[in-house]
Length: 128
Image 1 (cartoon, one colour):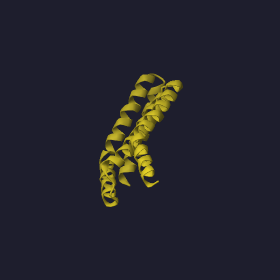
Image 2 (spheres, rainbow, N blue to C red; image 1 turned 135 degrees about the vertical axis):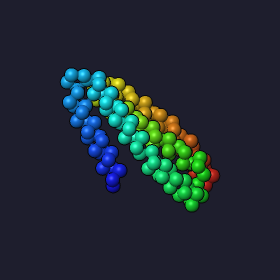
Image 3 (cartoon, rainbow, N blue to C red; image 1 turned 90 degrees about the vertical axis):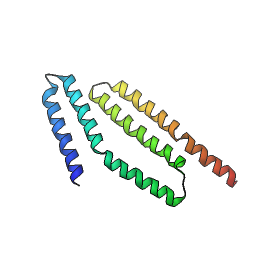
Image 4 (cartoon, one colour; image 1 turned 45 degrees about the horizontal axis):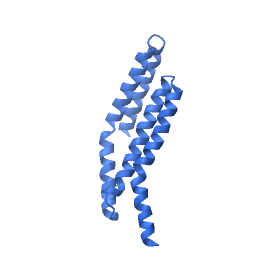
């Protein structure tokens, strides 16, 4: 709970600072928001490592190979990066660019999960 409080506090402080700076220096406000976002993400790397270890353990217990879970992890990564990039584009008043980023993220997520879908279809074909 203390980590989420720290992350939320840092984000709120960065947002207030960005609001204060936005009128005089809009580019600086966007840069401040990007830097704060990167720092927030970096602070979560420890939690990400523990989640990855848990997923590996569950996959081992379930008899799943890492090749099955890798597309899921890539898809989650694409979704997170797409969301962040689109939100930053929206903050920069570039709505059309944000839409393009979201569309590209959707296509890339589908491409990332394609090997898993292929494996499921192959398994279904074997069962029939």
